Image (cartoon, rainbow, N blue to C red; front, side, top):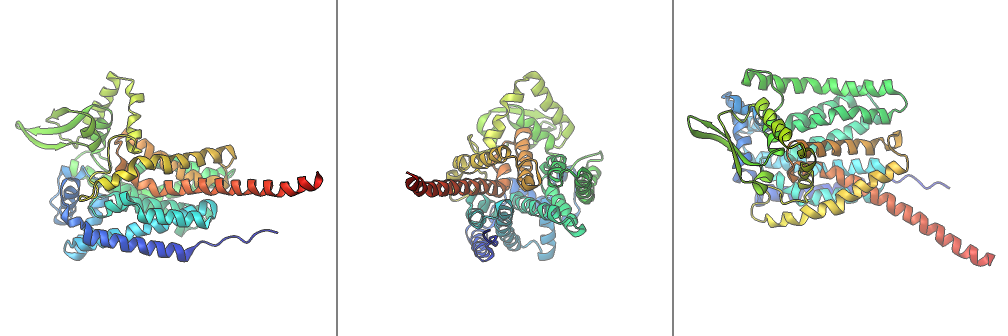
Length: 434
C-alpha cells in the first residue's frame, strides 16, 4: 500500500516566517537601524539613490549597479527618504526569503522536516539578518535570487506565459541589483534541457523566453550607464576594478587628479592580505583599463589561474575575511557562522550533489530542480573566483545551499531508515529459518 503524499507544512512554515519577520523588525528598527550606518558602501548607495531623484548624475553613478539605488530611490520618493520604511521593507524581504527557501526545499524532496528546517535556519541566520540592518544590496539580491529559483521551478512545472514573465522579470531585477547574475544566464538552458529531456526544442524555447523577458531591463540599465559614461557600458562600471583586485596583490587602488587623491577603494579581502597601493590618474570606473591591468597581472604570473582559487576558499568562509561590515555592536557573533558554514552546509550540499549524480538523477527531469540550484551556486563560485572572494558575495546564495544540504540529509536519513527496516525485518525471519 502506498503511503499518502505528505503536504507542505504551511502553518509551521508560516509561523517561522512570521517569527523571522518579528526578529527582523526588532533588528532593523531598534537594534540596528540602517539609517545609523551610512558610511562606506552604505553611504554610497544612499547618495546614488538621491542622485537618481535629483537628476545630478555623473560617471561615478555608474560605478555601483543601478538596481539597488533605484530600489532605494523608489521608496525615498514615496516617503521623502524615510529610512524606517526601507528598514521595514528589508524586514519583509528577509522574512520572505525564509518562506521562499522552504518552498524551494519542498520541491526538491517533499520532506516536511527539510522544509521546516530550511525555513527555521534561514529565518534565524545571523549573517543574512545583519545585512538587513544596512543599506546594502545583499538582502534584495538574495530575495530576488530565491524568488527567481522558485518561479523558474514553477515555470518548468507548468510553463504558462504568466509564469515565464514572472520568472524573467525576477531574474532581471536580480541582475540589475548585482550583475554577477549574468554569469547564470549561459547556464540556464542546461536546466530546461534537463527538465524537458529529450525535448530540446521546447527547452531552448523556454530558455529563450526567459532571456527575452529579462533583456529589456538589462538593456535599459546598460543604456543608462552608457549615456552617463558617453561610451558603451554594462550594468556596473566596477567590474574591471573588482577583476583587477581579484587577480593582483594590491590592497588599495586610488585615482589621483592634479596630484590629489580623488577616490580610493580597499576591498576587505585585499585589505586583509596585502599592503601595496595602486595609484593612477585613470578613474576607477574605467572598466577596460582595469580589466587590461588584471589580465596583465595574470600574464605576468600564469600560475595565478590556480593560486587565485584562494578567492573561492575566502568566499566560502575558510580564509580570514569576515562578514563585513557586520553587526556593528557584536561583530564577533558573526564569526561563529563563518567557518562552520563550509562543514555543516556547503559540504553536505556538495555530497548531496554527488549522490544525485551517482544515482543518475542529473541531468534528468526528476533531478532538474537540484540541477537549477547547482547552476546558481556555480555562478556564485565563478563570481568569487573572477571578481571578489568575499563571504558577503556568497551569503546571498546561502538559503539555496540550505535547501541542497537539507535534501542530502533527507535522502541520507531516508536510506538509513530503509536500511534499518530491512535489517529489522530480516532478523526474525532468519531465526525462524534457523
